Image (cartoon, rainbow, N blue to C red):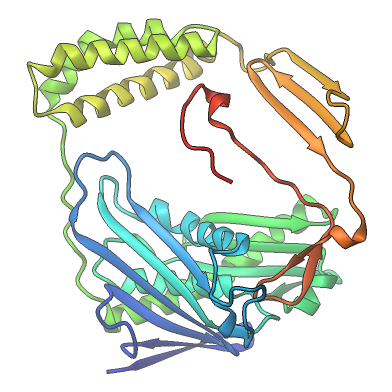
Length: 392
C-alpha cells in the first residue's frame, strides 16, 4: 500500500512515496522534487561476510538518457558504463552515510539510486542523497541516521537554498553539505574568492535546513520503518590479543622505524609474516583475528609516536619536509613535460595543447557543456612496487 509524505524543500514540494515500487528491497522510496524523480533502494545481506575487516557498503548512482528524453549518442545506442559524474555522485552519497553504520557491522549493504526523471536545472544528486537516507532509515538495516543534504548558493549577499542552474551561474559559492541533526558529516564546495565568515555562514545556513529534513525523515521512519537487524559483532579474545601484542609489538616497532619506505615495507612484511607463522599452529582458527590484532598494534604504535615522541614513522619531525626537486622539458616531442619529486614520491606530468575542435563535449543529463581543460590521472602499479593489471 502506497503512503505519501510531503515536505516543502526551499519552496519546491518534495514528495516521498513508500510502498509503490521495489517492495522486496530492504528499504525503498520514490522521491519527487519538481520534475526530478529518483528511486532509491537499500538492501543488506542476511548474514555478515566472513573474514573481512571492513564494512562492505556499495553505492551506485544510476542515470539513464531516458530520464531527460535523450537517446545515447554514438553508434551504439545502449547505455554504456557510468559517467564520471555518476561515479562522483555515488561517492557523494556514500561519504555522509558510511560513518553512521555500527562499528563491526559486516553485512553487505547496497544502495542504488536510479534517476528516473531529471530536470536539468536542478541537482538530482541532492535528492538521491536524501532518498538514500530515507531508504536506510525505513529499512531493517542498522543505521545511526538520518541525514539530510542540501545545495547552497550565495548571490548578491544572500544565501540561496538549492539554486537552479541559472542561479548557480551567478553564485559565488556552490556548496553541497550533508549531516545529521547534531553534526556536519560532509562538505564539498567550489567558490570564488569569499571570506571565511561567508563560507561558514553558508555551511550553517545549510545545516539549519538539514535539521528540518532529518526531522521529516524521522516522521517517515516512525510510521513505516521496519525493525532493525541485531548487530552481531565478533569479539577478539583478550588472551589472544595479549599474546600477540607481547610477541609482536617489538618486531613491528623495529620494522616501522626506518627512513626508507621500501625497506620499511619489506621489514614490516617480514615482521607480520613472523608473527602469523608463530601463532599459526597455536591458534589455527584465528587467522583473521591475528591479522586484526597486528593492524591494531600498528595503529596504536603510530599514534603513540605522533602524540608523544612527536615524530613520523620515517623519523621526520612534524614540520620537516622531504627533499623536493623539479625538472621540466624532459621529453623532446611533447608540448610540455615535468617531473616533481618529494622524497620517494614522484609525479610526471605531460601536457598537450589543442585547438577549440578538441574540446570535450559533456554528454550527461545536465545542460550541454564542454571542457577545455582535461586532466587525466594515472596510478601505475609500479609506483608503489606492486603488480596488477593495467587498464585504461
